[in-house]
Image 1 (cartoon, one colour):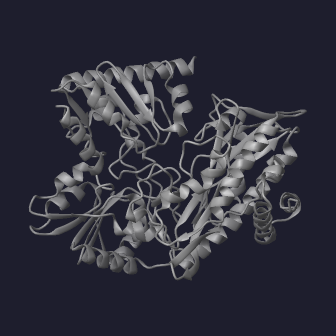
Image 2 (cartoon, rainbow, N blue to C red; image 1 turned 180 degrees about the vertical axis):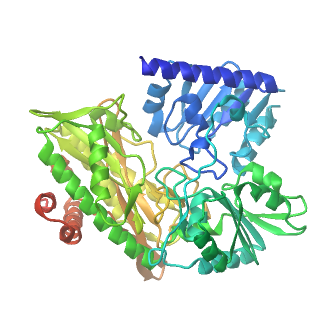
Image 3 (cartoon, helix red, strand yellow; image 1 turned 180 degrees about the horizontal axis):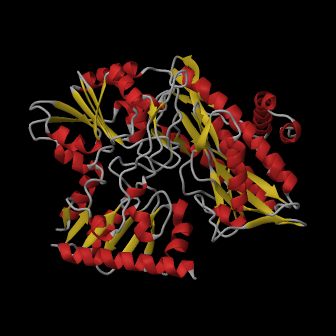
Length: 609
């Protein structure tokens, strides 16, 4: 059986079915974003329609199907992956600069004739995206219809709503009681002039309620909506997902439970003259349409999005504990890996298996925080590469070790923190060019790690600090340098982001307590990729006559392989930073280890001279 050919035929058949549905509805195109009613990044199976229709498994992208074309819009993280996975399907991969690029909007406006109509499911389209889409299309005389879900008509045996149980995130790990969070949000509502607030984003709801779930792979969240007023908090969640004892606890804490499907109707029943706070980037069009015209809508960022991004001192302390456990797991993994080279068969899939097993042995571990990226040589040049049973690289086998660079990007969810780390290690010999690339990326990572900046600096402005050493070599990378990270929540969290693809708006300002990744890279397509990633915590640095200044505390605790460094490219102060970092890694991770793992840690944290 030719599985690849079968998959391509399935994709072509599904696109044909969508075109038939378009004709039946009198539509010229269908827009299929990567989204659900909560505008999540990672989706429950029911809303993985873009993947089902296109065969592209990346976590971001937009599919557009017209009567005579199909285009998949992806940023540089997925260019190679998308081309490989859609080859032979009739889908054209459209390369965009960043995940927020409106390229598909402009393409639709330019491609379709006046009088045509584009369809999109308003239940998974953000209010902000709909506004931008409608404005651009209407300027060209193209209509937009959002009251349909064409997937339902062509997707047989589509999954239903997720049913995994919801559970408590207990104290002391949940350091603030639910009542305190409700009080904080109600104060923010009052400041905004609102007496009601509707929230759909799953990590916000999990944070507010101190609950966790398993409705989305890798992210410990659950499908729900939340309506908060000055008097009550209504949690709309699937029947049977919350056990009776937990329901009683929630009710004592001020929450009322209601069926998941009743959220829109409850919005529609709000009293006239209610002032409702909505975040247009975090609410779908369908829910906005459910709000009566008599309700005054106040548009602002969800207060919970800002609040949960600023970790408390107690949460930061738990994250440091998670980093020690994670560092110990990685030391055990790398000790095994170096010992197994040339003795065992090792593929990219083996890396995933072994690194997950090492984390699973650590206390407090729940799950990986995302799908492990293990890319050897050319595969490492795809920033979001994922090895599969059908396509993966062999790294070593008994009596033979391949040469080059192995990039490993992985992370874990612990009850007391979320981790995300990338390391590149040599397999056999490395070339001068590989070591130069590695060292320039390291220089960029160190530059950002050592940064000091005024509190309130827009996070996108910090991006150039990491890029400068790479730019100096006439190179660049297409992804952002850093994303926010949750506390036993989503590994990608806003509102801050160290990236040129994020507008430098007020809510992107760096504040104490924010955890952000620091991950510059450099990729040679078809040859190798380098990315070095630590998580950093924004902490107070000093107060001067010019105001409050912040710096970054490095949280991640794992050696950075010095065998890949071209020493002549590092300045002495950079070497000093690296040696101090390695001393801290040894001090804090060493007590968690013994035997070969401890010996590996001591060997890999020797000072660089």
